[in-house]
Length: 182
Image (tube, rainbow, N blue to C red):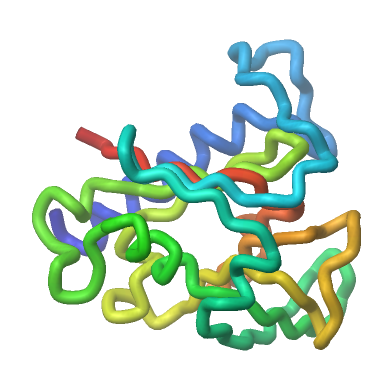
């Protein structure tokens, strides 16, 4: 699959996921049933890459991983915000997800569904997450401007640095699931 096809697939999947989660100005009456919304008090991230590839990450556990810092412009706050966190690919690699030179062929048909505690979902192609494949950084952030994330956005938040709008930055991140387009 060429890069353009992978991006097109990611956009189509993102649009499909966007229709599943209500948000400002979106109606829930015509939506398909969704899974129950996780409890907002959840303070851990479940990462699933397959039936035997599952991890549970708390903010304390993430401190053991190397951290990166990115600055994004948030149109909602009309300000630049600096986030620090762990590269999502580092967490996925911990579970055996192909990355770097091993990210090719069938693995390029895989994508990530990231879900917030309010049920908001976004999609990213696996190639968008790998720093050896794509110039942007995708972080599981645990702090903003040097302070832990507050209850409205954290304790964890997905940050996608190359997006022009922060629509794929998931607040109160509770789950990451690898799926395949096959």
